[in-house]
Length: 272
Image: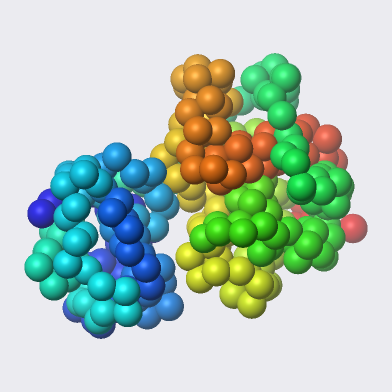
């Protein structure tokens, strides 16, 4: 079966075949652990993820019916080899959205009226930390959010991921090199923190977010915020993803945008 894969996992998929373990299964997706990297194979009617391979079938076709939790499979040389199913990667997509340059005034107009908070998540520590560009404060705020809430991707994780992805990508669109340097400085500590406080799957998505790599609906909203697409419809589409994931991602992204507008640029990666 042909698949479309994220360039974020190109190396994992293109290297020589290596054993992988099935972390979980559903009618629409299978989660794998490959050399410490989480890879998701999903159907075309599921959300396209930054670490995913999308097949041409829909969930109703039950393409993953032979895949068992805990099973050992093989990944590499452009293939995912399951029992009863082989996925061949035939195309690639970039999970880091290409954003056109924008101005603070244009971004402020684009996010006007969009919610930057969700119930049960205290946004204030993260908002302050991002606006100040303080790596220690961002990590402290992340510690209070990671693992907050139930599910495969807890609400606090999604909120944090949205904020970091927006800060990274919209910071680039605003030509804020200080923001990129600051996020680079926290990437390693954030990875270690996420590995100890949340699910393996969610930790992987946070790691992709800090590099600006997001699920397809989140990428559409980021592009719309910089003038390529309709903001209202893109925001609505993202909030319809999952039960809490979409709304938390969207609110986090708006928070990240606000933080860029309130921040004072620095040239030293966020250190005073």
